[in-house]
Amino acid sequence: MRVKIANTAERNLSETSLACFIFRRLVNLKSSEFYQHTWKYKPSNRVTLIWLLLILLNIHYTVAAEIPIKYEVHIKSDNDFFIPSLNQDQYYTYGQKFMFRKQINSSDEFLMTFDRLFKMRSGAHILTIELGQEAYTPGNPNAADYHQFDRPFAGWLYVSPSVSFIDKHRIITIGSDLGLLGPFSYSGKVQNYFHRRISHDKELSGWAYQIPTVLGINIFARFIRPLANLKFAEVTTENTIKLGSQSTYLEMGGRIRIGRFNHHTNSLTYHTSILNAEYKTEFYLDFSNHIRFVGYNATLNHGHNDEVEFAGRSVNNLQSHYSAGINIGLKRFASSFRYYFTGGDFSDIQGHNYGSVELTFRI
Image (cartoon, rainbow, N blue to C red; front, side, top):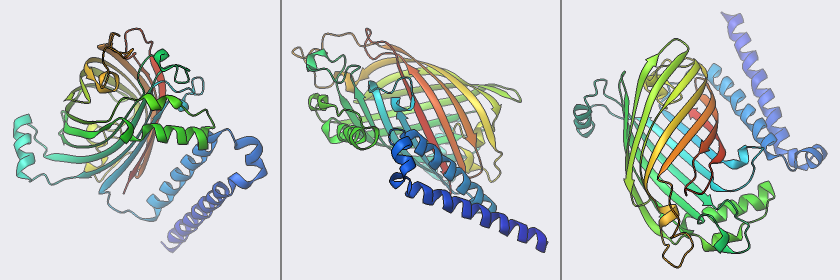
């Protein structure tokens, strides 16, 4: 027993020392000659090292202490910057999202009312608080004349609380969005800061013509149900309805997972792992296809009239959304990278590609 404890201590010390070494290199990287020649215009390399450091720290933390998992912190970044062959700002150009999750009391009378309404049997509930910021730009954001833009500049800053009801047959989520569209979303300021200080791209002056400020309110419901489950493959339906002043749509589709994954009640895909003390490592690919029927999109329609060039254009009310991702889930840390292809907002706009990086910490 003493030998085992000593070996564990030595391994933890070794991992900690290696982690500290990598951290020091990251801190001093910008001042090094190597950085000046090789890393100056490759911020993705630095992100990769930080990602590896986080994985190493998670392994050390998991070995060092078996602390029960109570909360989940989830960070998601959408950006066409993540697609090397694209790397240009257009349409849905970026989104930054921070989510906090915790399991909530299953004996709450309000939640039990919904359990009876949905005929849910497990009484498992997860509360999610999401803070997000999104930016939308034309496909030609550097055009000299704003009349040449093929869609408006628009920003959306919001908070979104939701509750998920989970049993062995399905997941039902209900929630709302509350936020601001327009200049007070600060989406343009964040994008130009990123261009100026990180990607070293040209700042976009077209944000001066973004849609005006307005309050946005939505309510939504999402329904997830597994259809077929084999040992290394699973097919799931995913349907969402959203109604509100910022966005109104009905989305229907599904997802295929291939690899090593957990049941939907304890999985990285649906962020339900905090419901179970036992968590098996996940490593899988997934592919999704959704059809969206769009009733209203404030980032296209709000604030425009007959004198504005966008008013006479036909909004694309039927859109397709495809994605493919690679996912890794450990006990306290998980990460995903996804590639998205979405249909155009206007009928004469072609589809758009962008990437997404997700990091999840369970504490």
